[in-house]
Image (cartoon, rainbow over all chains, first blue to last red; front, side):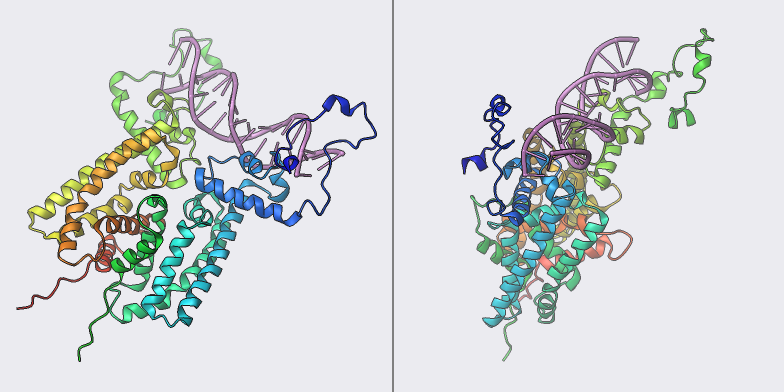
Amino acid sequence: MSAVLSPRKPAAVAAAAVVPTRPRGRPRKTALERDDGNRRRDLITAAARLFHRKGFAATRTRDIAEAVGMRSGSPFYHFASKQALLFAVMDEGMRSAIAQQAQALQQACSAGADACGQLHALVRNHFDVLLGPRSDFIPVMLYEARAISPAQRRALAHLTSEYEAAWVPVLQALRAQGRLRCDVKLARLLIFGALNWSVQWFSARKGVSLDALTDAALALFIAPAHKETP
Amino acid sequence: MSAVLSPRKPAAVAAAAVVPTRPRGRPRKTALERDDGNRRRDLITAAARLFHRKGFAATRTRDIAEAVGMRSGSPFYHFASKQALLFAVMDEGMRSAIAQQAQALQQACSAGADACGQLHALVRNHFDVLLGPRSDFIPVMLYEARAISPAQRRALAHLTSEYEAAWVPVLQALRAQGRLRCDVKLARLLIFGALNWSVQWFSARKGVSLDALTDAALALFIAPAHKETP
DNA sequence: CCTACCGATCGGTAGG
DNA sequence: CCTACCGATCGGTAGG
């Protein structure tokens, strides 16, 4: 285990030439120990964390390698470039955000939530994606978009469209009820802005919870239901 | 004029050694032609434009120098570092945004605007700062904060506090009127988010005007005035 | 403010 | 996936 975590000690370099029976280099792990496919995922996770903390430009591929116990050149065995690694973070982040959102919405609907309840579920889930425990990916995607290529941006735009598509019918229903007093498209853009910006100021340790934040946002955007006039 | 704009031609290099009466190097401009203090401002303006377009990391100091007709090393005569130039962009941007906002609010007040009218003026001005003709500075400040030092961030935080302070009494008044249904502090953060995010999607050529955008935002955030119950 | 540089950094690669 | 390395880039500087 410690051999995996600190593979940097040059054990006995001088002795190596004198003991030819021992295979050269450090002992290779077997294919099983190497748990191949997960190394790529490890890199993505570590990259997401570092890109989130320090930004893409300030993160060196060496930092990412070190974070998963690789040497400086090894990430390029898994990814063609630093940019490809960034894209993988964003792509992976969007795909799991979409899945997570679908589940949250499904759950609300099967509990009989109305449009307002569905929006609550969407907003709460979005805050979780932005600020929750596994929130390294989407903030990177939101705030490092300039570092990827136009083609990559297009690919991600498809995913974000898919993500946002779930909001449209919900907002339209609220609009029809008179509880959203603004063009649906603009409302979507403004509301996403309000939520996405929380990445800049939210601190988990002090102040509001994600639940309280969700309530505040809904109170701000959505008018109370009309009283029925009997 | 063209000598200023394209000072890169090596005119007659070989001849230079043969004509010693001519002073070495290209003809110096006089102190008057050099209009000293404004070169610094030129650099800030060009830097703001490039940082906004391409981002801080992707902009080379050489690009900035070229944009104002200097050679690659010359910006460092005016600024100690690339980071200092970035900070100057942000600082300058905040100071003029504060001044512009004070004027807009003053104008609304002396026209007898109520709290809602004042918020309208603040939002409209903020969209102008973010998206209007002189909008290179604040977007850079909003989206390149990670590239400056903690001390510089603190200095800017004071200015943003000052900028935001003007919003507080207006929001409080609307809250007291029941037209803002959310804690004032959270409302401020969410509303700024909604507006600031417009930098990511607004396009001047297609779609809404800044006036229409302002109306939509106010309709979304602020409830209609209560009908007076006589 | 230009000329002529330097020197560190860092993404990336050849070969095993 | 490591070793050993390259090579371009780019912020920054000495001296005038």
